Amino acid sequence: MNYIKKIFSGIAAASIMMSCAVSCENKDEKKTEKPAEEQYIPTEPPTESPEDRAKNRTITWLSDFSLDDQNGGESPVALKLFREYYGGDINYVPVTAEEKYTTFEYFLNCGDPIDMFPYDETIMPQIVAKGLFDPLDPYFDVLGVDEGLWDDMENVIDKFEYNGSHYVMPYDVSNPQLIMYSRKLVKKEKLDDPYELYQKGEWDWDAMMDMMSKFVSSPDAEGKRYGIAGEFGEAMLTSSGSTVVKYENGEFSNNIKDKGIASAEKLMKKIADEGLYNTNWYEFYPNDNSTLFYAMGDWAMGMTNAKNAKKDIMVVPFPKNPDSQEHYIDCDYNARMLVRGSQNAEAVAAYIKCERVAAQEEAYKQLEKSSLSVKEKDAYGKWKPFVTEEQYDAIQSYLEDAKKTPYFDFSYGMSDKMYGTGDFTYNSRGVINNLTHSFLKGENAVEKWEQMRDDMTEKVDEEIKRFNGQ
Image 1 (cartoon, rainbow, N blue to C red):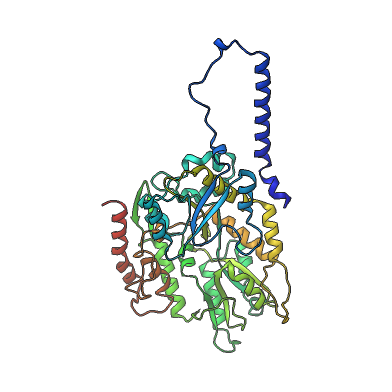
Image 2 (cartoon, helix red, strand yellow):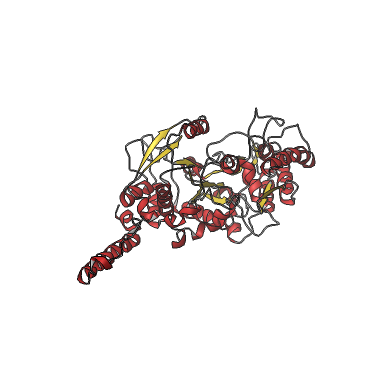
């Protein structure tokens, strides 16, 4: 792909110009060469720039997934860039997801070289606090921070600052939690179009509740109806705009009594109490017209279209808190961690830069868009998964919004007491898991938000004291 070779053309051109300049200077020096006794002889050899030190290095990557294609297909754009421009490569050390952290710490303790490790939401702050990673701040020059390469990620990166350093620098956001619906069904039921409401800034919790209530109570309903199916507890908590834990001036504080959290929890309970939630598991939007909305990550978009090819499916982010002017979208943050003491730190930074370049390269997005929007049927005459151009463009715009108003809660990365499933009961689950599941699942362990809030407050306080060193 020619565009891959062009991405670093500006950097490459600058390097060529510098080489030419050095060459010319050397020629000039030969013409005016001074006597040996007058020549300055440096006491130390010239040092390489961080950019040069990043080149021709092999990074050891310990992870439960490969950065390359293991099925004989093309390598990802970022890896191609790293190989072609920096002359680097990846030494992949596979490990299971369950043994990822124990193996990682074993390697470190034994002195085995590991350079890069995958980011996940459990890393910050508990794993970082163990001192297993180094900050990326010393390598901002290699990362291209001053080149404007990360400008649209600035708000996201700021959210991850910890102890005055940047251990996590997300190069992109992905997998937004969305709501899928049939415009054909919405029109038939004489309801407002959520996408049009979103464009007007009117897509909020109240609008969603009003639509679900009308749909479920319609006199024309045939059979049991539901307002929404899928997974949306975390998306609803995120849409409140309030985090369970705050981090300001190097200190954590308990924010569970925040008004936004209370509103989100009470709304989840109302959705369950009024029978609006379809608790059955679906991998795509239900195609029997029984359910108005389907909440899931964008991974379900392709199959949803395939199973509902004639229903004019559209997608919107989770509605906003009526008390907020902003949409806070639950999504994943894509990042790589620099392992403590890596001898290839500059190369790791260079690889992360390649990930960043690939994430924002318009040509790559167009290729992705083209490949996803292909509509074709299989040998049995059934539609294969696809994403329409309109859906793709809408999802990309939601991801851009997520960069402008990012949501990051340190609660998810503190411990299993804060974010863990336990044995799936109220007393064993982590705080976040109870906040996002208990009311929606209709459990009888707690009846009111105030009771859950009081139950969870002590657990949050305990974790905060631990991280604040009290």
